[in-house]
Length: 179
Image 1 (cartoon, rainbow, N blue to C red):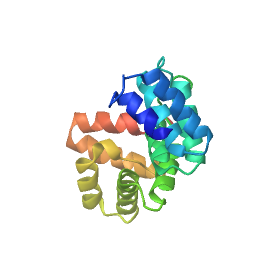
Image 2: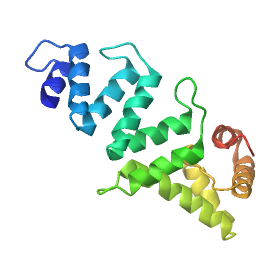
Image 3: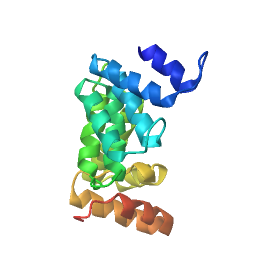
Image 4: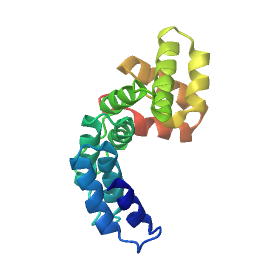
């Protein structure tokens, strides 16, 4: 069923029918295949075969994650990180929790591992007073800066401010509203 849905989605060997493909992905998911929910989430987020729906995207990724999909956890992390869709505020802590879950999968999700590694590096360097090393990480990965506490966030913002305004803007967009 999943294979048939994939063929219909792309139109390989059959007439392309994304709406029918979405139906089959959801049936496969209901039968226990987490990748069915994963593909349905991707389709609903892009409006392929259906009307675009952020609420359905969240629902399908959450169901796939409940079934153990590492890719679903990575996508949920990205959605929490950006505040994707109506009714979902950005939440970096929840994003990091999702990335950690994905990084602990067997095999680990490489994208999630990268997020976790960058967060731990900046946090560790700032806690150890290694401002120069933290600065290198911050300037190398400004789009992946996460902070585990208020003090680290403020110090990272100060380092960024010394560098340039574009980097500061990246950090302001990332910092929790509580800082």
